[in-house]
Length: 564
Image 1 (cartoon, rainbow, N blue to C red):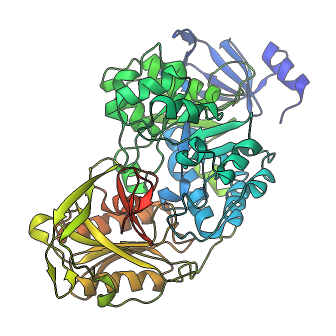
Image 2 (cartoon, rainbow, N blue to C red):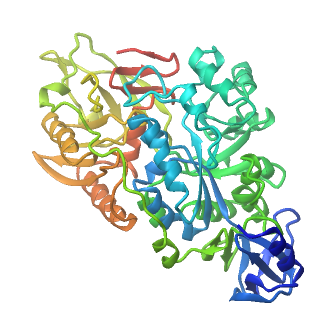
Image 3 (cartoon, rainbow, N blue to C red):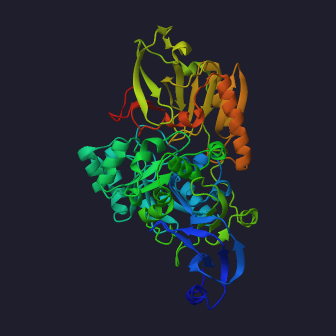
């Protein structure tokens, strides 16, 4: 950090600035004006805009428009399938200079040590990673997670310099009906930032939830839902992840009027989608192409995000602000030509200079070995609850189908797109195995399995053949977790994720390549979903309506109870 006197002298032009960006124009997100002139930087801080400056280093940005660095206001880095260091290298060059992460995926596997890993790693990345403390580990009492985190453990990390506040409070019934554990966490963070998670909540229940001090919300999936939450004082985060795709539905809500109260986030996005489409840069250019003004869009991507989360030192290219700057050839196209984070240019040399901590949470898959017979669904009645997938959403339908009982078992029926789904407890606690049915994969044969299984991260497996399901699930134990595709007694493709069964030790480029092979293998089984692996992961999350499955059985999320 620069000395105060240095900031003043360089801003006044008495001393040459450490770095000058010359020849471009600054897009001001307060007035919407374009500001000509140099941008002067001292250390990690902007000290001058719109004037001529001398600099120890001068970078020519002629013909480029400078905008503040983008802020992803809610994401789980684990869902990128790489470590924080590879996430940094993957996403920062696209203009994302701040990421507000909730490490509740790794926390559900190993508890507080997982959060501490992210806190320590975040101090060693070029990107500025801030941490929200995971509020719901486990997310409910209807699943078996690898850990449990109580209010006193969270409070012990409350004042860490990388911590913003309490992460998404998924147990909204616990808030509304004053569950003691939920109340203890809310009380411990009262007056601090608390992130929301209340899909389809409205009316008095929404009023009660917000009254607990919850300020932000990323689960709005319709314009009507987003508008009610805005009117009731929440900051609404438009989400576009690999599975949860709400951007098109919420785009009409983002205007110059609402932009100060709206932000952008990805929640869960993998390297393949980032490579093919982008990250927040993809959201920005898409929103503009759909009719949002550049001013509203770039505000939501930076200034509004900074203000929503209390990051007063960023979000605008102005004196005294952190030097998080993205240089673009076109506002509409939003493709970064250069990126500066805290005054450091995102280059291979900058990434190579980081200290990389050793991984944690190895050998975390301790599931029992299974056989084909474990996937039988024993029953004496044909009426069956079925999870109905809605592509591009993590909410599901609660369907009812008649499935014949043959020899005491309900079998998959691929002609009706009814395949078996199972969740196997992987943390070595009870060995639970639950089975059910799902519609929407298009699967005709074989199986796919994953240890990325929100939020408990047990093994989730979907298949048309029991033997292939057993092969896929057992293979996950051998490779320390990840994704597996099987057919005819053979493994067709796999991606090992040995860090907590969630993250690879390889580069994001290698993970992208492996994901392409996995997606291609899934398609040979008849799978029609664009992102089948993360879609599968969300079928086990019992805080998202309407029907889900955990290792304890099928869960009616609307009633918040296990039904089978």
